[in-house]
Structure formats: C-alpha cells, structure tokens
Image (cartoon, rainbow, N blue to C red; front, side):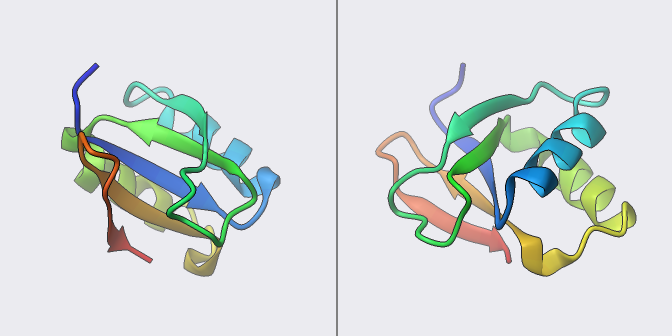
Length: 86
C-alpha cells in the first residue's frame, strides 16, 4: 500500500458504514481507526488510495449524505494530516 492515503472520518458509525458500502464497488476501501490528529470522529474511518479523492468526493456528495457528518483528509507517510474536504 502506498505511503500517502486518504482518510474519511465520520461523526457516527452509521454514516461510516453507509459510505463504505457506497464506495466499495468503485475503489479499494479499508476500515481503520481514526488517527489521533483528528479529534472529531466516531473513531472509525475509511482508508482510500490518494488517486480516489475526486471520485470518492463526488460519490459521497451525490449520495445526499449530510456533508457535516464526514471529512476527507490526506495523510502522508509521517502521519501528518491535511484537511481536503470538511
């Protein structure tokens, strides 16, 4: 797996599971614990390849899921976290 990756964190587990089901047919998705640098989360996040950002963002936005329930981050090889979409 590449050093950099996307992480989507969620306000609740229900939304995490819904987004996982939404994205799985389109890209590799792994469930992971939310990194400590991200404090507002239910504790469950999804890990995606960095090149999946635009497709993942569009799929989640088009699904009608409230954008306040998730955030997308870029995580680098040193586990530095950058907010991409919140």
